[in-house]
Image (cartoon, rainbow, N blue to C red; front, side, top):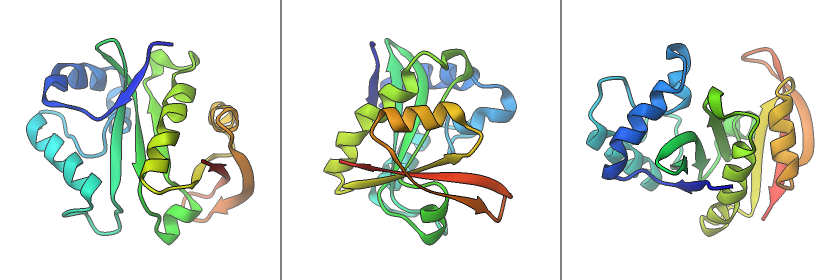
Length: 171
């Protein structure tokens, strides 16, 4: 599979904007949490840089590194690595969150992005990676297990009233 997981650069603006359009308008937040349509890309990169360094974070946020999955010059999805966890992230969210644009799902990209993220987590000092997903997200169960995830527990998220699966991957 030809996929490269990496941080964005100034040269990626066109790919980033095209990647956002691969999502339905109501779901574009899955492409990026920080960027807003019509926003300045250079400013967006600065926000991502500060997030990775833990600078000027919004309340309740932790340092995180946002990576994008490129197939050639096309962005197919993104993966966010949270360097530390708050009590709420220990329950839901974990160290890694990923999303693949609808047109690219069921082709192995999520598995490959997670596989490439594991050594990055190790370099960040995360030796036991917590990943969570909704009980009904069967595709994520398979992606996580295929990358060595072991089911730790199932619990009810009392905020959204959904069952959550918590997996751990040792690296």
